[in-house]
Amino acid sequence: MASLSLRHIYKKYPGGVTAVSDFCLEVKDTEFIIFVGPSGCGKSTTLRMIAGLEEITEGELYIGDRLVNDVAPKDRDIAMVFQNYALYPHMTVFDNMAFGLKLRKVPKETIKRKVEEAARILDISHLLDRLPKALSGGQKQRVALGRAIVRDPKVFLLDEPLSNLDAKLRAAMRTEITKLHNSLQATFIYVTHDQVEAMTMATRIVVMKDGVIQQVDSPQALYDNPVNLFVAGFIGTPQMNFINGTLEKDDDGYVYLHFGEIRIRLPEEKGNADEIKPYIEKEVIAGVRPECIVDTPMQIAAMQEASFEAYCDVTELMGAEIYLYLIANKVEVDESLKERKNVVIDRSGEQKLIARVSPRSTVRAGDTVTLAIDTTRMHLFDKETEKAIVFLTEEEKKKAARVAEAEKAAAEVEGEQTETVEETPAEEPVEEKTEDASVTDTTVTE
Ligand SMILES: Nc1ncnc2c1ncn2[C@@H]1O[C@H](COP(=O)(O)OP(=O)(O)OP(=O)(O)O)[C@@H](O)[C@H]1O
Ligand SMILES: [Mg+2]
Image 1 (cartoon, protein in one colour):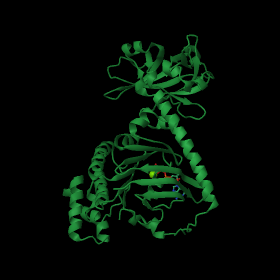
Image 2 (spheres, protein in one colour; image 1 turned 120 degrees about the horizontal axis):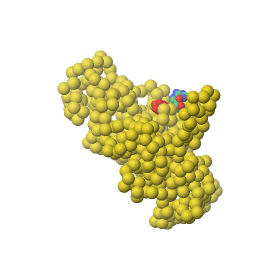
Image 3 (cartoon, rainbow, N blue to C red; image 1 turned 180 degrees about the vertical axis):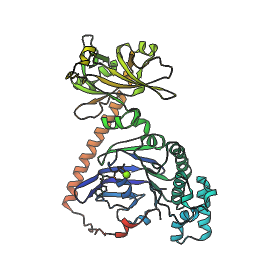
Image 4 (cartoon, helix red, strand yellow; image 1 turned 180 degrees about the horizontal axis):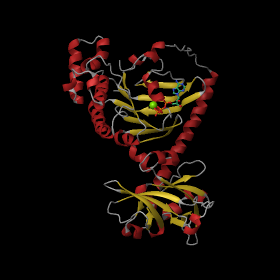
């Protein structure tokens, strides 16, 4: 078991690619951390740096209290599980799992005990004599996990371990891995671009984009309070709806979001908040989760000021819910115009929205319906910076002020200390970096 500390880590590849920039993260013992982000955002690179398979260009990596930048993978007390399982085809399941321990000259009896114990946890005891070719994808994945488990590592690193499996098996393995994490009480760092995996398994999620951390938070906090447009759009299916609109204070004194013909009233406390003042008469992006668009008469009656009409283009029955694909501010086109050639219809003012409603909904494709937005759960983003406009409660404002004051005081003290240090420079030995070729060649699981 171990904590990890990643301090200002960079990975710059020769040729000018910066795959990871200023990555800072404190991982607590037994946490289940998941890195998510689109393809190429630096998830695997970060994981491989933790494993020691990739050199850290800049920054410091601690496992527990130990600086491991220059420690070989095999000495880091970690085990990595790869997407492609990497099993030895000519070895039985038992031998595949035992191989790493044999290399370490672990006594035979201990190896047997450990392999059998891991096989029991993973429910593959009946497969120990088989060769990998006689296993299903899910079973292979379990063997790959078993090979990591027998080593009792402090940290498990998993790079998209489920991406080769079909949807049903993935869902089953998700639960298995969560159970495994609970029973092993080890630290897990897991890479995926599947946000469902991230939402269901992680204690905390790290959302990355272009090598830069966007937000680190618990799944629920990420979903409820995304810090920017990217995170808001990345987490949640169907995606959060984004509406380009203008905030205006209308004659009745309330603040409304205007888009096309539609206006949606902001809740009073938000409309009057200091945070909103700089955005009045300005364009913003509103974010509305599909479940925050409601369609029942009772809900709409309670949210009159946030109701609007939209055309329902398509409905998708998902079993427990229906997705409505809506068009608000739909451009009505004269039939005779449609038949004429060379007529370009400007649909840029149309606003597409997806709503997630109960299967009892009476809305049908082709209907024009009244809906409402639950504005208490509507997000607003600055159009320029794409950052969320954050509304703080009085208590949070006081806390933020206290933190700012403490930081200011600390900065002042630090400034004084730096001056004294400069007067008497510390004589620290300059460490020479050793290039260890085996670092990149070693398979961590072995
Ligand atoms: N050896 C290399 N040399 C140069 N650039 C590299 C090298 N390896 C990776 N990169 C680049 O670094 C960036 C991050 O790659 P990485 O494999 O970490 O992405 P990822 O988030 O794991 O993506 P995916 O979801 O597709 O696996 C990419 O732009 C990639 O092209
Ligand atoms: Mg990857």
